[in-house]
Image 1 (cartoon, rainbow, N blue to C red):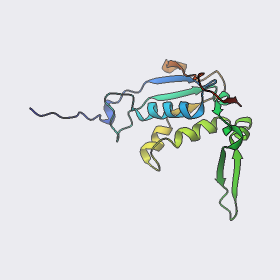
Image 2 (cartoon, rainbow, N blue to C red; image 1 turned 90 degrees about the vertical axis):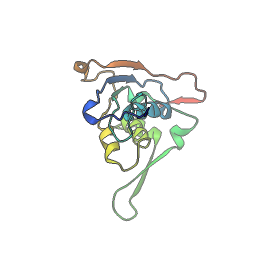
Image 3 (cartoon, rainbow, N blue to C red; image 1 turned 135 degrees about the horizontal axis):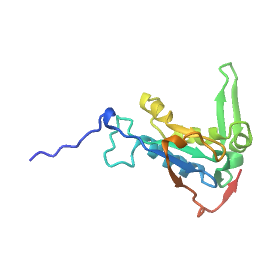
Image 4 (cartoon, one colour; image 1 turned 30 degrees about the vertical axis):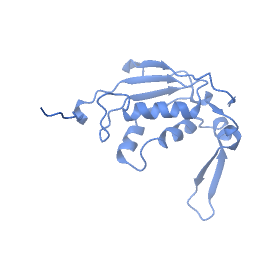
Length: 157
């Protein structure tokens, strides 16, 4: 008797759509949950080399929270491409700025495999919005209320 593990083929994958309300959710915990759903690790037939995750729609990304003093002390760096062109912004500055959804997007991106075509494809299945509305009602997504209100030392943006 031979035991074999069944691997998913890309044509066999059936993607679900899920909506997550990020209001009062802690960034790191929410990002790890989203990364797990994007990769497909919640499925019993998970295959590491196949994009078998769900499509995740996140609402209220501007209302996420940080624990401790990360809102003021966590620094995001970028480079302009010119000599001496390193720029930095704190998490609080980004959340108050023009694109507050980038905090959550970067957190999820950094939890996926690095520099991989599969990770880039999985990131295309993440849709982040700052408000309550989203244009994906036609896909009839499943709603997941994600709010970890038990954490201590939580500061809002």
